[in-house]
Amino acid sequence: MQGPEQYLNELGAELACAVDSTRPAIIDTAHRALVNYEAYFVADDAALKEFVARPYQYTGKVTDPVSRIRFVPTAQSPSRSHGGRLFYFASGETAATFDSDPTRYGTPMPAMRAKDQS
View (cartoon, rainbow, N blue to C red):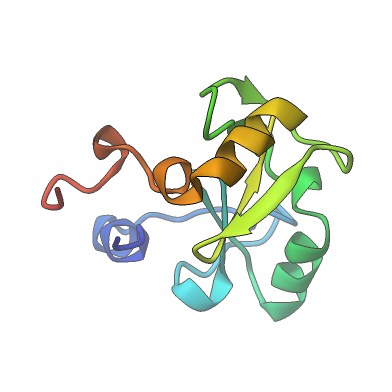
């Protein structure tokens, strides 16, 4: 699956850093973190390190990959890594369901994929 960088750059999008909103983010894969079905961009390597250490402080609402419930993760939220992406869960039950088939739940649904992909 292709990331959003090419599309955002073609649009000339300007995003604020996910860690420090007063700074512009660099829109490339080296300055991107993937959490649940969202991509977060940061201004530099130090900001990426900060984001990766405590992503729940910077994400806002995310979508539980099993229940599709939107919620704000905390340090206590169950989490898993799959396919280079961090996933937070609204409950231990949805985390357990994810564990039973991470490929099913860890891959964005067709409506979330780029239109040229199936």
